[in-house]
Image (tube, rainbow, N blue to C red; front, side, top):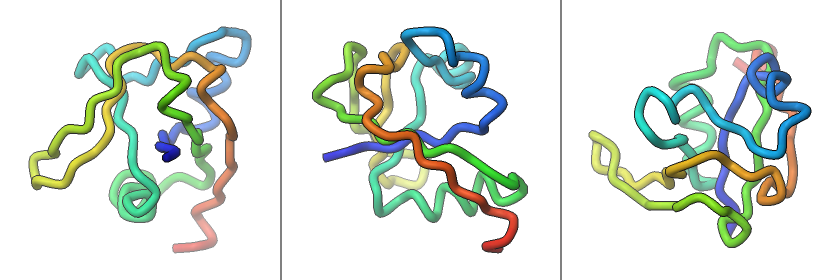
Length: 103
């Protein structure tokens, strides 16, 4: 099963020459927020509706070198959290999604 992480192109660009990616939440919350496929549209609508474009990282959890934990959110829905940097070898696809014209 693939898990997904949403990032803005500006943040992703900072890591273009690195072997690992670290979302801002890793420093603030000690993990990187991810989603399952059925959760993506809701997460995009809740947190990224004002973005013109985002990138969706498709991550193979079996290739991660960091710990992956499925944990309930404050509303009780379970989300995958990555406790560490994402090694880019685990990212199997980077999908661009334009949002401004879909809302």
